[in-house]
Amino acid sequence: MAFDKADKLTSDFEQPSKPNGFGARHVQAVLLFFGMVFGYFLRVNISAAIVPMTNPVSDAPYYDWDTDKKSLILSSFFWGYVAIQVPAGLLAKRYGAKIVLGAATAGGGVLAFFHPLAAATNDGWIAICVLRVLTGISQGTVYPCVHTLLAKWVPSTERSFLSTTIYSGAQLGTAIILATSGVIFDSSMGWPGLYYISGGLSVAWAIIFLWLGANAPGDVVSMNKVEREYIAALTGSEGSGQPMAVPWKSIFTSPPFYGLLAAHCGFTWGFYTLLTEMPTYMSTVLQLNVKSNAMLSALPYFAMWILCLVVSPISDLLINRGTLTVTTARKLFNSIGQWIPMVCLIALGYMTSEERNLAITLLTIAVGVNAGCSCGYLVNHMDLSPNFAGPMMGITNGLAGVMSILAPLIVGAIVTVEENPSQWRIVFWITAAIYLVCNLVFVLFGKATVQTWNDPSNMPSTSTMTLRDHSELISKTTAPTERKENRF
Image (cartoon, rainbow, N blue to C red; front, side, top):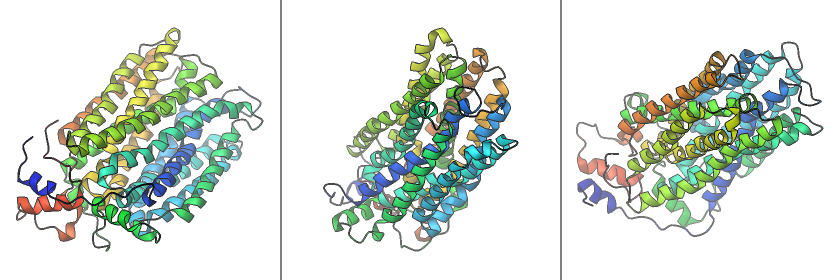
């Protein structure tokens, strides 16, 4: 493989020694992993509980809420979620992601305790919507805060694996809450127990995280010096230690940013359409009972969690060996994560209750293969700008969150008769089309190289920056295995 001058300068960058064994960065990764698990308990509990809350399937109380009310309940979480995204990224950068994330998760856990009481009030669905908006605000801090922490803690040579491992907690949390919901519904607690358990675990995690978590390696006094130097050299987010103004204009005029935004929106539409509507689809179209529905609804997310842990080391290996550039790897795995599910959803639209086994297989593939996106757009914020990964995640997750609001509402408008497979077919075709277009934009415009605006205070103007200037900037903030960008 031929190298140009920029490749030569980058490859000459001396890689620091990698520390052996389990280090401080791994402790933080474990904490954040469980934070994702319990955070998704808070956001997914309503998707699992909405079926027994609105059907007389146990001794627990139920409520006569029609499809429109249920769609509003399922989407209301994202009203607060979207609104807090950018402020959360800025708060994390200014005051520290640890305190913002810990306090918000504790608050979300407390809110979960009040869901059963709210549902029992007059116009209980409105009270539930209010609680879901507030829960959305608490959970809207998660991705901007975690991205801010990852940019400080995760070396670029381990970015796919550690970041994906942490974020795979979302899939495991979703799978656990869906898989255990049937057992909880059949217990003496009934569906209210789902809220009590998810709330209690979230509060417990927040207390532990506020005790053991850290905003940056510099906050851990007992940290190994070799590991500290290794992280500092390969994160690219240390800078001068002084707060830097977010370069909003540069971000919003950056084509790679819009490629990233498109990929994030596509993933969010597909993921949350299936997450919020799958239990209803399985119950009405595939005619599965609540208990088996709970287990089968969880299966795709178990598959996604496992695949996240499989594809992320493969991605890092291909990048670190120089087989693929970072940019090519991001586009390849993101395409796998969105275009294979696209095909599965089109086929799923033609399944009936007699073909439920094939339908479940397609659903499992469609959700499970989404794991590829964890090595695609999800870590691309840190590729483009380690210093502003948190605020950037706030922007893209906020705008993508609009998809989370629209998806249940559009499903509610299209699926007026929940037992009608042809109406669900329209939903699956729309989702497939969004996957196609959004990932295509990422393939055309996406990049995975540090952008010049990552450190605007130290950057020469683009009109006077030489190739060597740019190469030396990249060598300071990326892994030494980065090769010159190929076309994907």
